[in-house]
Length: 223
Image (cartoon, rainbow, N blue to C red; front, top):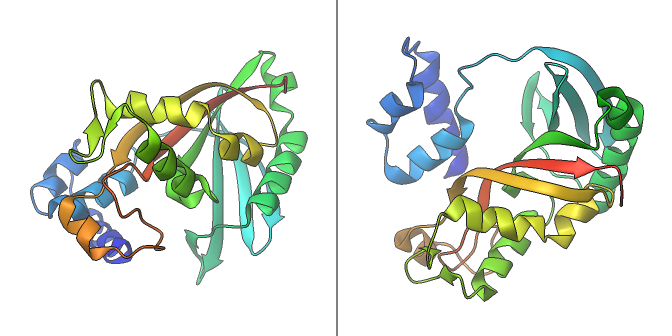
């Protein structure tokens, strides 16, 4: 479903929608399920300047850490297929080792001169093991209403951010760096129809719990 949605999104944006709020316009044309995927894949309206870039191999994947506007960082993990970047998920161990190498090369703490740095990690579902841990933690949390597919109270972004801040998997992927702050956007929770279609053991949860979002972290040099 997701790959089909990606192609639909690309065709819509490729058609040249010359308006500021592109995602709002596309939302009028697509189904709710496809719209969720499109919102995650939506292009950014504000351009950033890449002021540094460091890369290394993680199994068959390429990991690139980019410095943006000399203030924040963007981690990308991908595989080139016909000169197009495709999603690529290495093992957790390979991810952590590769992350350690690009961080050593970039030396962001020394460069920024601060106690913490901010990194955009992209989609949770594309980080090894993290989506499964997130769904499992939400299922066990009393603060999450599984039947309704939302927190008992409050905002789902805040709820997911708190879970990920305590995530052992996330900390291991980041080489043991201390998580100072986590922020998320566009949390995905399967609809009732999706839950009935997805089988146990698949990449997606079989309950109405969060399984994906966009993830930013602030990490400190201390461990």
